Length: 353
Image 1: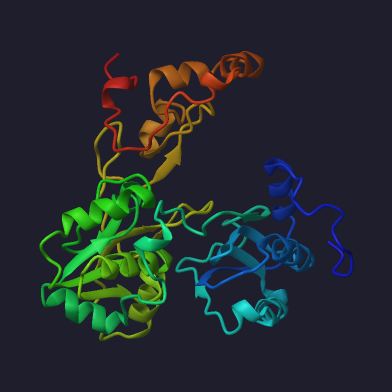
Image 2: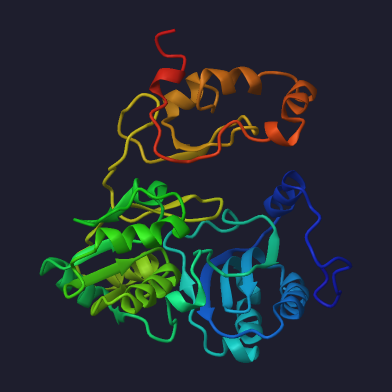
């Protein structure tokens, strides 16, 4: 894209196939970063358009959410445009000196294939009313060293991510709630910790944004010693990698919400293929687009089941595209499955049939 040309459209019109072809032609590296900030944005729609124009000119790709309560961004930036990007972000008064979190495993252009900026009611959907929390009153932020010390001293540690995230990686001895969304998890965690209002509680998530809201929520409900991992798993890993005296207490992979799906933090494989049960921590989406279930599938099962989660999905996925479209016609047929809850798919696959 011409750096001096304003985009005709304030949204990306490329389909994935075309966008990936453009990425394959790039002869430069990209930095994958994330950042967030709770801050009052008076006119998120106007800011959204300003950012889209500026970031399109810089050839930035990613997924960004704006709301009146702040910004939540995951994106990648061409290395040669990095300084211009930082200058642009910090020029917005709400985002001045906002810290960036760098990917643990950098995969160039593999994290995103287009730029999407959306305005939402909240930057992280939580289902809370304004009376349930005070985001200016949050827990204490702990460095990696402080976190390890507190964890080793027996503090209660809670994973504030969804079950499919913690299934492939989590901190040792962490409470990992069986929840599918952050909205579900908040009241569940409060109930799980009931009676422990005076004990030290440690919260962690991918980059820190969910813990920011959770810590204020728990403090609002009487928890006295609430702490959160500064910068989340991402920043923790960078700190551990830079200090040989710091032990890594996170086992497995860190789930990320982009095309990489996960970053390896330790060599431990703590989860199993949902179809055959052997050790595996590779997530995939069912190839049947009518299903699209996120599940763990090993290479052998991917080949045997053609990337599908069940016999039914394999059969549908093998049909001509026009027949698949007919099956998806009608609002009631858009999805075969509606949940990513923990599933045992072994009864529904080809093995033994």
